[in-house]
Length: 302
Picture 1 (cartoon, rainbow, N blue to C red):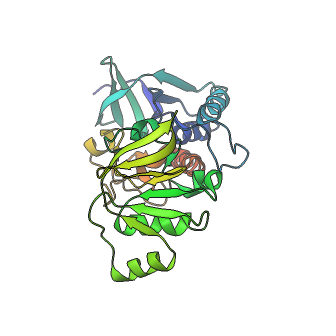
Picture 2: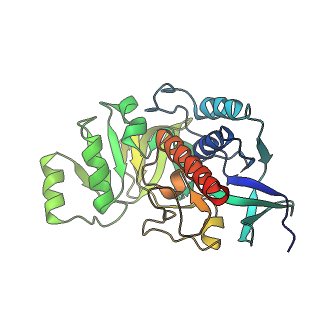
């Protein structure tokens, strides 16, 4: 079989993790192709917080600056579009884009992120990432001292409320159905004056994504300034799974401490493979993935 024209590495996903991996590889003179369709999960978020040197900037500002810096490395190429499928080959990996073009590489990094499964309730999608938020570390400081709701149940609700309670005294949990807490958890919530409301939510009233109140199926309406949501997620791309990558119980791509999956030559980084969901962590894991891929390429030929 004739060897095709190979990139050293193809990176699927060109947000923070993918760009960080690309920079690391570009600095080692690796021929890299970054495939990205320009639709990050945080495109609606007004500001990115808790990322040293970039605190308070918009996600778009950070990623645009990152791409400008990565583009300076002339061994890195970009494809603006979507990778739709992939397969393992004798030489590495073959990626097919939405135009049917085949692209080959020795190694593959999947940095495709995740997709939040926000409930189909009026006002939720418009507010997600703005005032309906997922992370106290990313957004909690901006809503300190505010009247805050938490849409979650069980362990997830207890975990979020324990973090949020440090930021505000006024916290209410909405389980959207029968509450599922142990007696010990209920005692903790009671001792911290956290109310539990089981009634289903029918609407999140907002102005340009900023929550004003929650409306319930029984007609009751309560004013809030911030709401945390503990919602499920799915992988933004099924390419890693289609190649045989193992997944964790939570639904992340399973990796080792070197960002390696169980598929030889395939690495994952960013939100798709970590419960630590932040820009800072995405950049770190991308950097680590780039370094580990380069180490494998060195080992293969040195």
